[in-house]
Length: 382
Image (cartoon, rainbow, N blue to C red; front, side, top):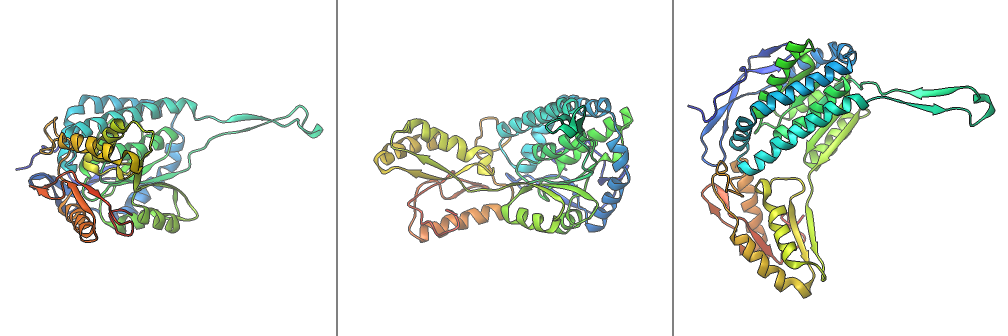
């Protein structure tokens, strides 16, 4: 028995078919229950997908702007029709609070809408050539051309939105795309790509224009080093992103990498607002966001007042089942992530930091935690 009834075919969307592969369970982080079985790809399937994408590169580049826009608009409509189901699936596969999943779907829809609008603006420009007498009576022009096969590698925390950041612009530009999902959260992307391929079949666009290959790092490696790739778009950790940039060279690479975002509270700050911003910016998506606030540096003259407000707002954070609309913080994506954060907290306290609030597990959830006076040479700070 699964928590979510699968609405897309079994296997991986490679070429024009869904290829059957071995499956692994995707577990609901909050309870450990089975959400659904997910297909697991490998490097050989990545090569097959690459063959299919390369074979239709020309066909994709010749798609009219009318068809590209229609493809995106009709997929937008298909996603709207299933909006609540996607929100629920995202909460189940990521463990992220439903309120954040609703924001993710809303942003995904905007990305599709903007991509469809951008189709009409993907044109060139005329350039005057008569700055010298030899150019009198002449003009030059340039045009935008599809770059070719796009490889989109997404992170686990916003799987649908991050896939949309890559799929929307690729289709708008007339480029075939292969998406490689994070191993922990492939389900929403597989369902969305199924919708896209259904629309493609209906309007006469190439079904293989959008493919998905799941799996481990060997899949990403196979995709990023293939000489037929036009551009690699990666969202994830800095270490992996830098490795991809080296491996993919000289092909173009677009990287959106993790960070360790800091908030500075100055002496003339609205301290109450700063404390509210700390909680809002630090704990959305249960803190699993590349721009979530992770460190706070406070001018000493306002530190006591800031901590007073911070304690108040931290006590109001609702921890629990991510399916509950009231929940603000829930379980991290898997037990490995939870163990890693707990170990960071233990290391910090052993090094002299003190726990103002949180610091322990409540079922599968780490209580929202604030550490004071953290040494700057340990993992949780850096």
